[in-house]
Length: 183
Image (cartoon, rainbow, N blue to C red; front, side):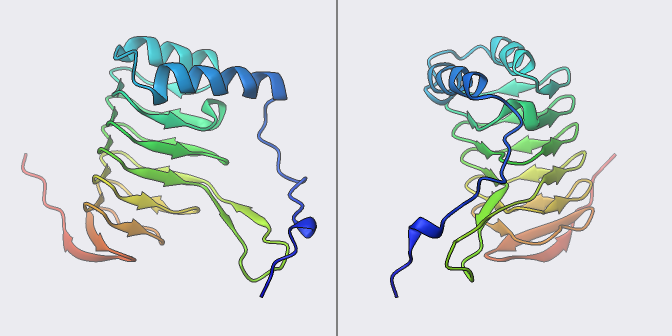
């Protein structure tokens, strides 16, 4: 079955920034964040703030990170964003404090409605509450909330909300344990 892409119309989508701001961010993201030429996290944090992100203290952003729209991003205190993380935030992404996004993790706020011939864009926010750990090469899908101190194991896909202190694994991720934190 062939899809008629001429029906593809997502003109309703508003990235909440003008085309010039998006263009300038494209180059900043490409040259400073995604390429990894500038390893200094403090400069990256400053740039994110200049483009409208809300960023707390002690945030560490490693090289080769890709962020779609910083003005739709909120990051708490003492967050670690590892190499090759992709925050594809067509919608709001809120990251709490003491969160770890391991290498290659992906936060995807957009998808398409495959049931419609127009393949309509669907966007939903993502929330990572305090203490969450997203494992290496894992994916958090649109509309998911990872509640306090939950863990998404390596190479897993969160398609639904994750319970507080739950440890999730697989594709789709299922709860396999409850996280115990020593004092």
